Image (tube, rainbow, N blue to C red):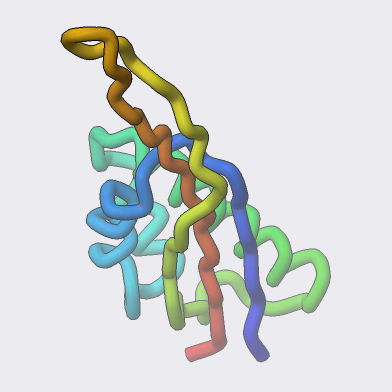
Length: 110
């Protein structure tokens, strides 16, 4: 049985989030939780929050044993992008893209 958890509209680029999610793919869920707790990045906080949600879904909604769960996939995708402008030289304007992402973690039994 697979269990999912999704966090949307995280104000961070998907590229920065992917660096942390690659570290936990394929690991035991509790090992991944311990790793994310010590990684000093903002993206680790959101990945840990999503992983905790997936563990709670597995335990409460599907009555699965938390110790036997493995992270099948941890992926991120682009969310909505805020488009802003910054004044540039000679009256022109430069575009600023404030990116956001969404995270999906899938757990399965080992």
